[in-house]
Length: 72
Image 1 (cartoon, rainbow, N blue to C red):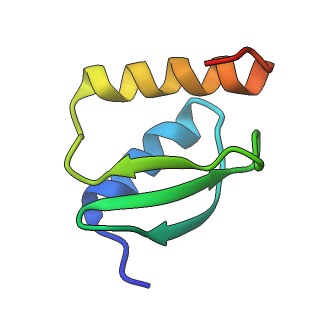
Image 2: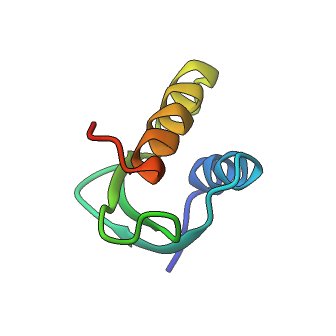
């Protein structure tokens, strides 16, 4: 599968924060369904257009809450 560069950059940022992507599935348009090893039962929908630092920071904070078991 051809994964866009901006999505690969997002994955690198998530891995720096301690999250590991296990699978990526293309969805409609510019969206991708992404599974993380830390919470495999809750795939996340990520857009390849959002490489804004604030969006990444908010996603990482949300993923930390999900990994702790808090409800989002």
